[in-house]
Length: 380
Image 1 (tube, one colour):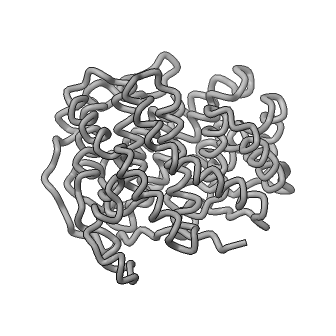
Image 2: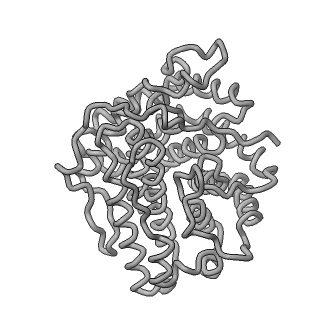
């Protein structure tokens, strides 16, 4: 089994790099409130993040490859290496910003940025561009390019296209299919032979890769892929002898919640009644108001730039995992007070993360715009 590999974000190299503001959040109301109290994007919010992701996906420089690429044949401008996913400092960030643009166009088709989004996606999803992307993925990092983080985001893009009954989406999905199919074939070969799970909230998270791949497998009716993912998920996460230390997150380099990524995955794996029992064992504090106050406490930092922006991503990821869990839990699984505590924690996490986004810091905006969109729209 080849070692899992992924391109590492070199956020420190971006510190101090700024670009013109799109429009500050202070001039917009980014969210509205759903009937259950959770937040969703307003039309202004959809436009705000669409502008940030459009700016990012068209930003070729700075790019990690100046520091990372060593092959002589790779000493080309990023747009020649990755004609679809060249922007946003690195390949995986470009991919999840493409997901954000696609989701916003699909969900808010009448925003003023719709035409620009269509133009961008039309260029990115050209068949000839995707074939260049496929060749790169096949021939770099010992055939483990961006596995499992970036490749799982690519499957999320494919899922979004596949589930949209729209002529453009059907064309783009057809063009993307060679790359999608190759990633699926890799997952079928690699996931069954992973000897142990990576219990982190960073690019190496096994649970993250399995979760997005499972979403795609079900949307695309890929029964064989679904079977592989269910088997591996149950093997790694089906039982826990002690509760997961959510209160001690994030760990080290994490920019997502290691524990809630697992909980988000297992809600898709287990029947509802089994999942409630599993979650009680895995994270019992999520079922009491005092426990929620402890394990979902927002960790405030004075700085949000460079490496410390990981805390923003961590909290946005927690929002999307909690939204997913709320979507799957039976209505009587949480008391009303506990449910409100979850939602209030989500709102505090959102407000904290938005202190840093859209202020002109590329080290933040190149990935946190898309994380913001997924936080409120990914599992709505």
